[in-house]
Length: 75
Image (cartoon, rainbow, N blue to C red; front, side, top):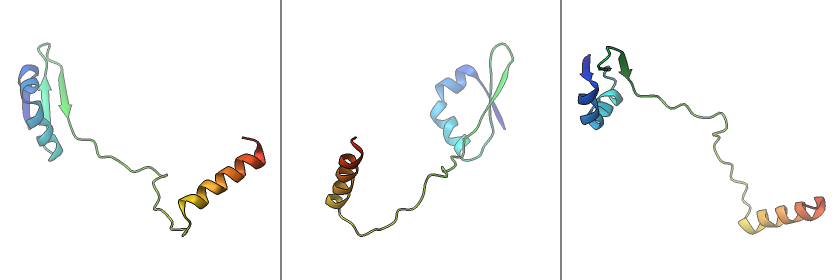
């Protein structure tokens, strides 16, 4: 694990981000002694990310359905 000063981290941020992305632990120490750790965040998928379904309908048909719905419900 490497510890960098704030100034070193600022000057080498791209390299430090690459190291963190590879799973290396990066620590940054401020002048006042506070210590921070930089790590990559693993993105999680949304429960709303679902695979599409092929309904075999055209764009024109979809537009027609929307227009019909708007006419029916006065939107």
